[in-house]
Length: 153
Image (tube, rainbow, N blue to C red; front, side):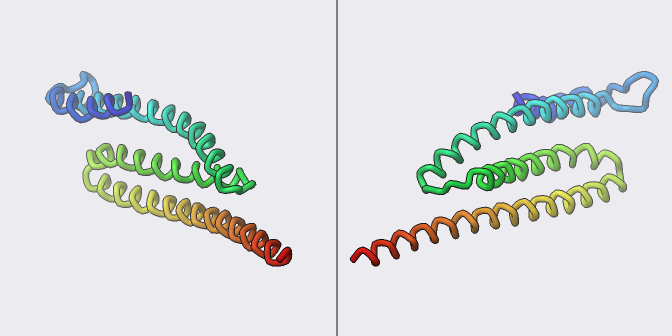
């Protein structure tokens, strides 16, 4: 559904761009585009909440296979990855709206890009830190098993 509304937000606004809303100096194409993007956002948020549930299930399966007991950190890493995707989608949806504002829109687009990039870098750092801890725990457990096997022989 989100893809359908996104396609609508691309196709329909140019077809109604010549129509002005009475009493306002707003183009009907802009209004239709904003409404379609809002519906896209609503469906994306819903899809992301479903993806969080699925990521928790997949994370649990992978953790059981790897023998790692700490679940909370890996779930947070999966959520961070989904947040990165959401930030990219929101920033991409905002760019056409911000560009319609003229010169200030270009400035706002640049600011939105840097803010999104900063947040994404923080989330990537968090994911890296979590993955490092998980690998470190796994390496320690393997080292402990090898030490026990060496003691038995």
